[in-house]
Length: 254
Image: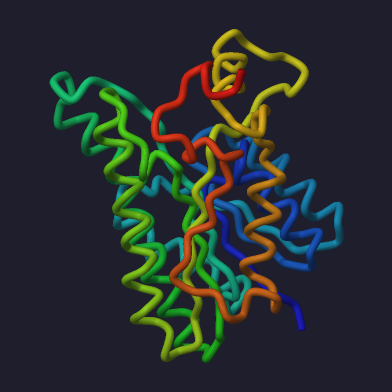
């Protein structure tokens, strides 16, 4: 039986890799994008080249009214949903004292509110079709890190972390599992080009390297698999150990 997935923010970066890896695992995939149509069409083309069905839907998830039509489109094309990957997100940093309402709304509308209501729509589809599905929320290790410039982003991701636990409990009676993944620094640009900032980041990661998008995709595949049938309400930290030290500087790795 064909499995189906909806991956938000899959035109590029981590979301694109997740969508393609799910296709390799046998999923037909609906991908959403808000920016470049060309990038989304490339994702679609790569999935179709694997022999899987794919549709690309433009959706501005910062507008909550765009979410029900997205899931209506999914249902018309695929029917029952097996897996939702809430990947769409915005990463912005600004001093707490300089955050304005516009930035706050822009970031939380996608990083938290869209995650909430996409999960809600996915759960309604799964319940209606009696599908024991899976929801994976892409969080961040910033949910537990404290930086002066990350008050909005970090607190939004902390909210996603907590939301995952709440809805995992509520949806468990339906056989729907809900988990999150907290990536650390993931390289989404050319792996052969390493910036000075990335060299600094590597010096602060105990495993001594930056993560790759496929490592997040592999965790999604695991959480959606039969091997993870007894896992719900959990967060998978994929950050090379970056959260381990209470205070990290070069003295910890010399």
